[in-house]
Image (tube, rainbow over all chains, first blue to last red; front, side, top):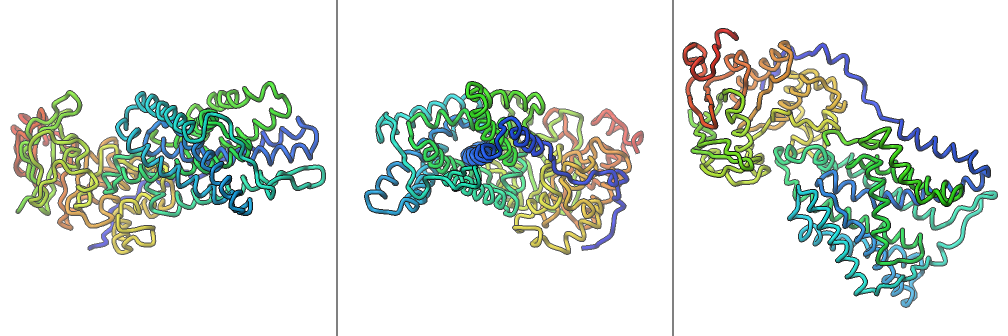
Length: 337
Length: 244
């Protein structure tokens, strides 16, 4: 092999801007947090609400990250994502109930419930992709109809197994209560939820940025057929991402159920609205956008819930409208989409 | 010279449209075969059909004697066929380095790229070394095209399919590209090159196939076509002499 150099220098090359990160959505997040200080008035209340908002945001991120990857990579609008949330939460009621009967420490019960919920939701996700989603790849309208239908069927199956009524999902004693920092109360469970959310974030960041599979996922989000033309079987990646996304939704269901301390078969449909707002705000297919969107939604819900409870129901829709007016493709749009 | 790729009576439909009407084509090993023709003649569809991105509805495609029609795109790529699409297919959110790591199937990360080969590629396309850690989306059109070609040669390939690499590029960049492709030609790399730029076709082609209305209507030596203005006029409605 020769090493002769072709005069390929391009004068325009000098003009290429340095790779830069778009900080403005982060600045928006910080601005919301800072604006809440004078609006709330009390620093301790502000700290409590901010921690609660960040914890809620991270729980939503755990659930929504899978959905945004599924859409980004597979171009699948999975309106049935909520069923995995409900499944995770109900599996947790059974596992934690069994654990309580078997005398497990409450903390152990929570982590076993999370592991089992992820395994069950992942396995059902595998079947869901194979039976419901695979026949409608590339057909958006049919995807919406069939995945919503799948969620309705899933909800009914949950009712058959666990009954139609609300079931309590009490927090173990170790997670009850709050730590006091001055006048600010930080609930123990929210700290745990935030820690799990951060762990999921770290795992996702590592996988997407430091592994070849992550590289394939990021490339596949932009151009699936080119990834195939490079010799990779993207369909296997589809299944893997769908299963991982479903498992994360199952984990998120456990966190959400414990957060609410009860679960209903409709929990998935209720959270579905929130996570669709998050992935639209973040930019469809963008994992980092999903994180920023989830934190914004969590913080807004807590701040407005305190400042103007009547507005709280509308706050997330208003947030979505405002952000889409600013950035119609979301905070971090995925190129080529 | 034996043909590394052979198409026999290939038909392709895209939806309700019948695009290829029985394409016959031989791509000799170690040569650059130009695929010419007017817009809409079926050149891009031919390349995409070879890659399995469009299924051939009839006919056969053989690579080194082995039938590949009906096989999935990743299987075809794994046989050693690289494809540079007209759109370049660059992953713009990924860095230049990440694009190259993806193209090198054997490498799990940049440290596993073949260093000697990479130096050779940097020799062909110095801009890629300079912007190695930049998002590919920030590159100029010419640099993106260089990255697209570099990706195709990051590992040794038996056949490279390139679709209109000069499209939309400034003349100076096209000259750079011709230089790089000449270097590949000197390495006896087998290339099937779709091109509208006749200067480029004349500079690079050993053999030529001219398509019209979804068929190959002429197959022969590039030099002969370049010397025969009457043939150019009849096949392409253009004179190479006017573009040289």
